Length: 379
Image 1 (cartoon, rainbow, N blue to C red):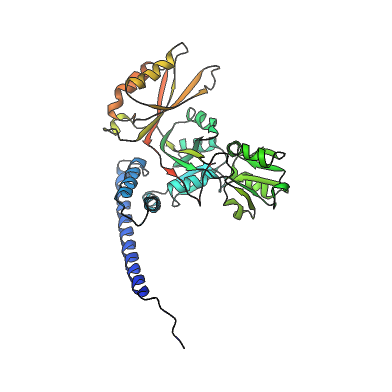
Image 2: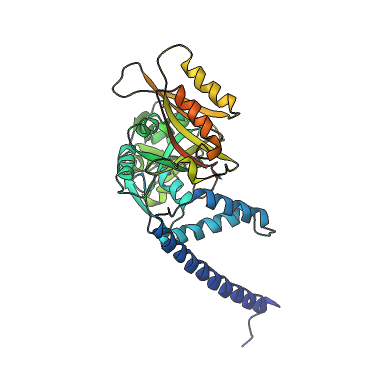
């Protein structure tokens, strides 16, 4: 019998890869043991397992040191999985998200926090905020705003109702697909989705399905389940739901703007850190806050002048009606600095002097942009 052709040198190369894999396995387990020891040390001082600032510095440093041929984004992706596993070894972590499984929020949470977390689906944003504030969940992942369709008003309102802190932020690119049991657009009479994707795809829907009935659902996954059971129905959501529900994707990337991103935040229970927790302000830090001002001319201008006087750029300002107080408003703001830094104590003092109330919601690193063609993200 003729021996099969062997590629010269292939066996030796595979042996070398096997040796490298064995070394990697040994090093990963060595790192895991150190991570467990760190977790034990944190328990002595009630230290939090998820430290987004440290993780951001680590990923940035690794990307800078990388000499290839692996791309920087591949290095970051690999280490996100390693960090997720390390967190789970230190302490099992339950992550609340807008369910059911298969929503854009689910994929976004998994992309950012890694697959080693325990993901808990919730019926609505209120359940996430309430569960996090009561300690039922370790953290929650909340969509805050979309680059096309604007802010998610309910998310902002719930910050004023629950004692939670923003621990991290990240941005996920959105790629919406039209999913259906039908084989053509002509057969689609009803389209289900969360209000945000319906708004993000409004122009496409007008152009391709002008007569279709648009129906809001509590999530994109719930919309997909409903559409999978109805003739003449379709849903807008994550493309991966098509295979899960025996549907087809009639059209992909149907959002009105290719540059379509959603900003998510990770929330946890408790107040934002005090100024003595970090003595030096870190670069590329952001802070979010809620504040109210006296109802007279110039009071909002006074707040803006405080940040201007301290050389701090405000990147977002949103007003929302104050619950239980007609025609009074609460303001949500993002600023480019670390308000928990001891060096910002005078700014905080000046801010409180011109506000009725001021509450720092969180101080966190500027979030990464996650753009995965396999797991594109939105709600």
